[in-house]
Image (cartoon, rainbow, N blue to C red):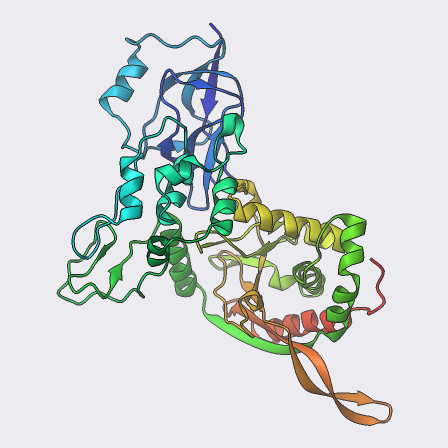
Length: 442
């Protein structure tokens, strides 16, 4: 009987271990190639581990919650399709330590009864396989099992993928109970006399507030942001840029660009291009700090903050951004943005960033003061582009004209980036955007 050792995959250059979140398959289950076997997590990202081979899961060597080093064997797969004997030691391990039931538990309402939508999810049983990620999304959106059963799946064997359920949600007509679940009351700080910890989300006795426990990614983001503010003395500089030329060029050429390259061009790749060029002019912005040593990075790897369906953020990294053309940057930006929304980013695609760009203008904000993404020393925010009157210098004198204007802001680590370097770098980015050629070829 041929056997295949499934090892803990490498999740990025700096990741040495990962936590097993959930075994999707049990001992004795048949597995097809590329089918998800388990879900794992690092301090950077959650990820599904697919099977590299067809076979039967013969042995599980680690349980949910275990932290396992990269490269260690976590499971054995019989590749000739033979199920293990019931008396096998691995099967006994699973039986003595069963994983929790994946059935979503209904949230308590103010009167102590489960809400109808979540109660339905708990009652209706199904023989169709759903991954824990899909079940969690369904639970958060108030989708009962009966409704989940009606969603067409594009995965192997008709399996409902994350993309399927997110697409269903976006086209779904919300029922009254779903609207109620999707509009929670604003969270408030608990009173001093309140219990110090809350095991699960539950309304207060008065019913006018709701205590929401952070999910795992939100906890990690919270810890990372607090650490960044503690480690780096933040300073933020601002400039206003006249981006009329690039705004008009993009509007004029976006249709032709898509026809030629099959990609929609947004402002983000143009911003990334300007950032990469400015880093080339001011390489000391592309550094990190190790004690009293400054580590200068030769590669220009620009991270772009992208929103997840959960509302959390993730930062995929465009490696060697200075080597890519505008077309290459557009393809990279669109690919990362799409796969971030679908939860399909690979662990190494969010590693190795040397500078981060966040577009707060996407949310209609004109400017922002972002927090540095450690261990980097700077992060730039681009605000919304707005029509504004501006003074132009012409050969006939100054005139007032309507221009497309935007604010750029740069938060930087004042331990190693002083005002001259930070301000000069930011001004250079604005200069490149303002000098965008209005007749540039696509």
